[in-house]
Length: 230
Image 1: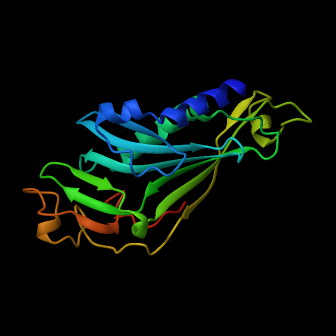
Image 2: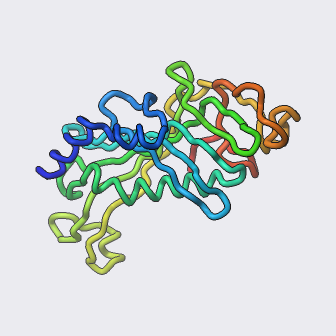
């Protein structure tokens, strides 16, 4: 664990500032004591997507908190693929960034992924962008998961999953619950591909004259998602 603490100290001292400046993505929406990690990635048919992540590793408090605060250059219709890429990246990199602990050492780590349910939205004529709208417009979908290593040794860590695996150790990443952090923080305004969208807010034609401020974010269109649940 010592090397993890040293790494975390480096992260929080330098805060991935070099990455932030190089990418041009803003990290000013990250909370105090959170590291900023700007991602830029390509998907088949949709390149140069940018997502800004904030992460706070729990050293004294055994929890890890990931928050996505900006999404730039979103290709309409790729929302699910973009979220899946981000979730996979977080899962593959959290261990290196924040570490973990054995499941038999109470309390185990828990990891929280959050994506915005409220924010500012802007269509630039070909793609759209989602931004954190500030302290008066905060509502996130919080996905709580277990985060610990089970060695499948009776008397230490042994559960139904160990039984199913025939005693093979595994990493516990099981889903616990979904919740909204601040329901009702923003208004439902139809935009993009929502069936009730007025012509001037559709994802077609030229850029919008100004962003939509503090509106509910749609993460799927068929049907338009409005809840954060199982």
